[in-house]
Structures are given as C-alpha cells and as structure tokens.
Length: 399
Ligand code: CTP
Image (cartoon, rainbow, N blue to C red; front, side, top):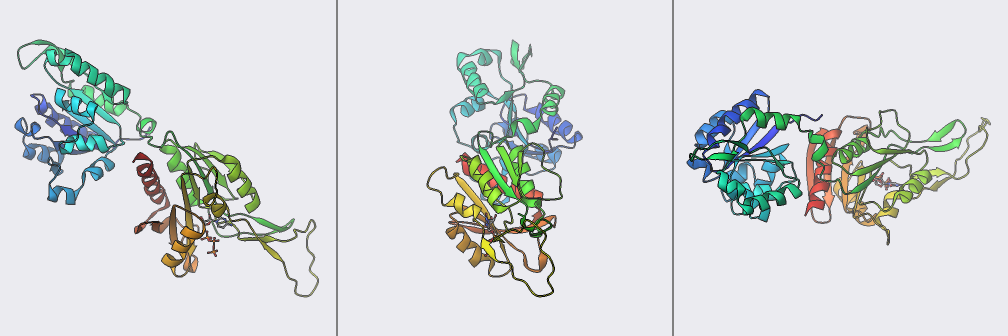
C-alpha cells in the first residue's frame, strides 16, 4: 500500500476548527507533512500563527497573493499533496464544492485538484439535515469525494444530533486505511503503449546488430502510467532488467516485430516510443553461421521502419498523444525539434547521449520539447523522469 507522505489540510470556518490543530499534530506524529490552507472564516476560529507553528509550514489563505503564488501556486499546492483533507468542512464549502465555485484559494484548489479529497463535515444538526446540504453531499459522493463523519452528539450551539466533527483519531484512521494507489488514478480511463529497450537484428544464427539501450526509462514510464491507472502495454526488446509490475508485456526482438505489435495495439490514447530501435537490419539474414573466409566481407543493410513516425503520421487511429525520444550527440535542440516535426510527434524528450551518457544509467537529463514550448528538466532518476512525464500526460488529459 502506497504510504501517504503529504497532506494538504483545508481548515474552514467552524467552531470545530480548534480540533484541526490537534489533527495537524497527530498527522505529524505519523510522519506526514501537513501544509494548510486557512480560509478567511477559518482564521476567525484559529490563527495562522498557531497553524504555521504546529504544521511547521507556511499557511496559505489568499488566492491572489503575489508572495504566496510565487512560493507555491494553487496548482502546485494540489500537486505536492498525496491527498486533500477538508476539516472541518462547513455547509458553505460543501456547497461550493458541489457547484464548482472558485471564489477563494480553498475552493479553487479543490476545483483544480486530481488528488483524492476527504471531507470532514462539522455543522449544526439542522444544517446537516437540510435537504440542500444532503443534495450537495450526494453530488459530491457521486464525484468520488470521501466523507468522514459527522458524528452524533452535543453541539456547541446547545443542540444534540448529527453534525459533530469526527474525533481526530477517527479521521487519522480513515486516512491511514486508505489505499492511495487505488484512487490516485487520473489516467484510469486511458490506454497507453510504450516501446522500450533495444531491438535485435539477426545477422546469422549466432550474431546480431543491437545497441546499448537498457530499457530502464521505458520500463519506468510503463510502471508509472500503470500506477496512475492507464491500461498499459509495454512492448519490449530484449533486456536484462526486471519487468514492470502490472502492465501487459509483449516481448519482441526485431524492429519489424515491434512495429507489428505496436500497430496491433491501436487504438490507444497514448503512445510513448522509448525504444532504441535499430535503424537498419541485415538485408539477407543467413540461415547458417557465416564462415570466416580470410578476407574482408560486407554486410548489406536495409532501413528498418520508423515505428514512431508510422504512429505519429497515421491518418486513422492516431493516438491522441504521441511521444518520442531523441538521442543526440550534437545539436540537441535543433535535431530534436526536427524529429518532432518529421515524425509527427506531440512531444519529444531529448537527451544527450554523447560519450555513452544515459544508456544503462539510472539518471537522465531531459529537454522536453512540444510544439509551443521547450524546457530543461534537471538531472533526475529515470523513475522521476517517468513520474514527471506521467503527470504532464495527466495534466494534458485533465484540461
Ligand atoms: N524510433 C522508432 N523507430 C525507428 C527509429 C527510431 O520508433 N526505426 C523512435 C525512437 O523510439 C525514438 C525516436 O524515434 O522515440 C528517435 O529515435 P533516435 O534514435 O533519436 O532517432 P532516429 O530516428 O533513429 O534518427 P538518428 O539515428 O538519425 O538520430
């Protein structure tokens, strides 16, 4: 089960807001980092200073605050969190969530997020039973928002009934029991294919043409797209590393086999061509071992199909997002931009492979190129490149 490390806690304005201070402390006892958004009415009940002191993090409240947006924008706040917890949640925030209003930072983050959201209601019993509240809650349940509580009991207003905020331990238990990997699946309605590894073109029964590709980057991409819920198939050339857990696997040797497997999988939503496909194959593979004849010989090579180009330039069943790599030893930007166009890709991840860099290594330094932007991703592990790419894919499909 994937462990929760970061929670974005939204504290709205109710008398139960004081309980959120204990909640922060107990979440931190579980080694969970807590970042808080305190709404304007929330700050009438608890002070930003106490929330900041307990969480050890800056407290966010205004949507249009230049300093805050510089430190961490509203999208970033959601991105950095594994889940969002609204505690206490007033009738007002529940109504805003149900109708998609965005008139402050808290409601805007809740609209912009693709993370699991837990709501811990706290309100007067009559407000809880009001048909409008119940209608809104049903809408949110249909949207897969999760509710913790409320509980029955004496209320601050002197009444008795349903509406009390759940006890801190109860909230913590519900969160810790929650399996993150099951629901943080923004790609769950999409399908993806990934080509990876080298291809192997046979010269004769014992010799072949291949390359140094380890398959690590493509395997990490397949794993991460699968973890984010995509129906994922990895088409892989021969490698010596462990297969990703979860994706369907198709093993191939030659570029022709890889092309066939790729085309057979269409239609898919996402195609990532990370394979180091052998550009050439032997014109005539020998059925028997080529003998040494005491003089130089020549091997005639024929060009292999360009799998990425075939996919990117299709008129029918072209995946919505076609992503390629560009391995370059010189003129990285220029060559990668040319490949983006010539192969009909939407995005290219370019890397510098001069002096044997990248192949077989655990880290990768990427220049991300699309039709309208180019950005350098600092050197990071191939797993993190995969996660960053998957999250860009998720952003692409969520707008
Ligand atoms: N590619 C492919 N089929 C090929 C050759 C390349 O699908 N026959 C894909 C790779 O998977 C990668 C992209 O095309 O996504 C670029 O590969 P790269 O090796 O950088 O470029 P090439 O097209 O082989 O061109 P060159 O070797 O001239 O740089």
